[in-house]
Amino acid sequence: MSIGAAPAHAQGRLKVVASFSILGDFVSNVGGDRVEVTTLVGPDGDVHVYTPTPADARKIADARLLVVNGLGLEGWLPRLLQAAGGKAAIVTATAGVAPLKAGSDADPHAWQSVANAEKYVANIRDALVAADPADADVFRQNAHSYLARLEALDAEVRQAVGRIPPSRRKVISTHDAFGYFAARYGIEFIAPIGVSTEAEPSARDIAKIIGQIKEEHIPAVFLERIGDPRLMRRISEETGARVGGTLYSDSLTDEKGDAPTYIDMVRHNIRTLTSALANPR
Image 1 (cartoon, rainbow, N blue to C red):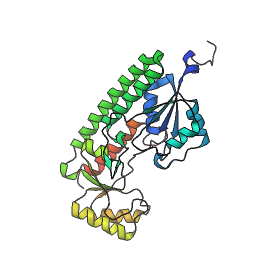
Image 2 (cartoon, rainbow, N blue to C red):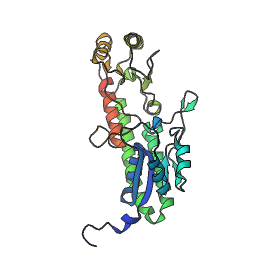
Image 3 (tube, rainbow, N blue to C red):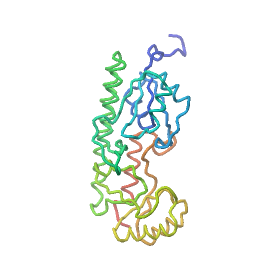
Image 4 (tube, rainbow, N blue to C red):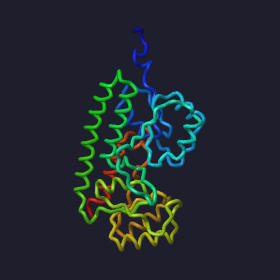
């Protein structure tokens, strides 16, 4: 092979499109160098409100596989598929996951339980094997190795939560994406009463939150839409609750961020939670 030439299989790598960054990471771990992964909603993007582009339709038209979450997450997908007109096989990564309810709808954030993420990976593995039988052994081995890492990660999270006193396993959060995490690991996520999660809380909202923290003895608060540090200091000073950092829910970060991979994201979130909850001040 001449210098700079691509490996023989590189020219025929399986083209896979993933709807958002977390799924793209799963596909990369299972597919390795046998796949070419394109992610529609990239790092730091919001898959809920994404607006597809004509370029996205072309990516799907050129792909052999399209990996989606399902459970209503990608509401923009049907129109995109119509525009793409391609013949990519669609892989629903949540197949086999028991959905939780979010109001009257299914909660789509199933990846927040690492045990569910293992089901995502198994579904992706099986789809890659079906699409490219010649590389089946590679996909199975990659998946086996990655699933072992996820199994260890699940145990790591459960052990970390186990170090938090049961009475302190609750937080107030504007996030609505941690239902599966709560169900799997036993940390209660409580929405702020009477406070919109769509806009920055007002001083009156902050007073309500302070009352709620005191009444329910909540040890930590994660309110990411508060831009005024004085309001956060007021919450902390008046209640003794720790003001937590960022919890990543729907997206990975870029390579320079705290959560460039799924495993990094879960580890970051559990470190952030345990630092706020594990020990009273």
